[in-house]
Length: 255
Image (tube, rainbow, N blue to C red; front, side, top):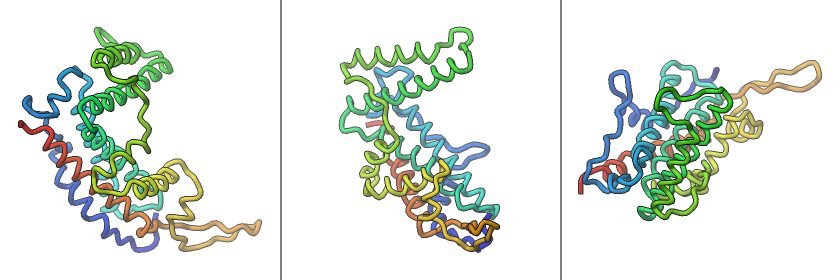
């Protein structure tokens, strides 16, 4: 853990937004769309594979990631890696929610949702294959659900479903939140480097505070988080979270 004083003032706006979404024992969910809303119209032919369900789940998952960093900060247990990995998870989820809601037209939004559902059920199917799990009762397998999803897409005349990449989603969602896509992509790349144990982010986005010599003449560096490098990630998370909440509320309201 850090042996230098951690200021973290730049995290306060994000933490304030997170605290507003905390309820008794759970995070406050985004509301189900009103039947007369534009979001409900998007979802009408999608059955259980709705845009709203994915967007709401992404919102909650993002809150949980960011709130975990808030709790670490309150406890004074800030290391140089976890703040990056936790806000990476938050950013990806908030961006996904925006991306789902903000397609250029109804067909594009439905295509995005069904593509994400298809990838979700592809992973479910693979997990079932790996573990030998079979749904009980009338439950359907991932493969069966993928077939349902494809049938819906075909019936709606949508293009072939394509696996959405995380960076693709981030770059598409950034302008919806008034952010510069390349800057969002750059900070996400650094966060991903930390998440996967790569070396370069330590040199680019951490600060050394001590060096310990070893017998072979190589020094081991002790690092702390570089708050100036981490600040944009926190700001982008807060901006995307607030935009997701505003956009979802507007789309889910009766018109």
